[in-house]
Length: 149
Image (cartoon, rainbow, N blue to C red):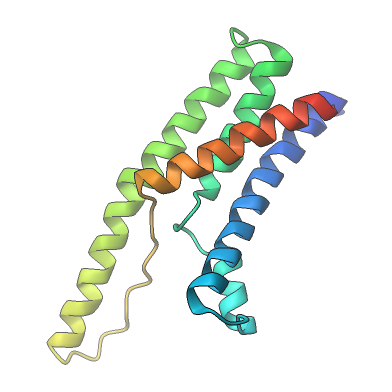
């Protein structure tokens, strides 16, 4: 199988959406801390799930926008991408967000009860503003990638 130039453009749009959103987290963390990040802080910000902006939303909407422009907004491939984006965004704002809140509460309860249990890894989801900013980034990247390709 081979991938045509439009397929490569979609892959690049998806990757750029994620990369630019993660870069936004790095910039945001640097501004918040008012100093250069340590290597550990840099890695955390670059790979963190959750936070501003939503990398999930940016990457999926970049791909979905790109596919809609290039294959048509009534094409099967666009509909599939739009459905997947909807599921991913719903999951990020509801399921993963709730799991993150529960993880924080479990860790707090274990700490308060002086138990020696290992802390639960907290996976953060996204708030609506984080999704909106990620969506704007993704749509702009999809449009730009369509113009380039």
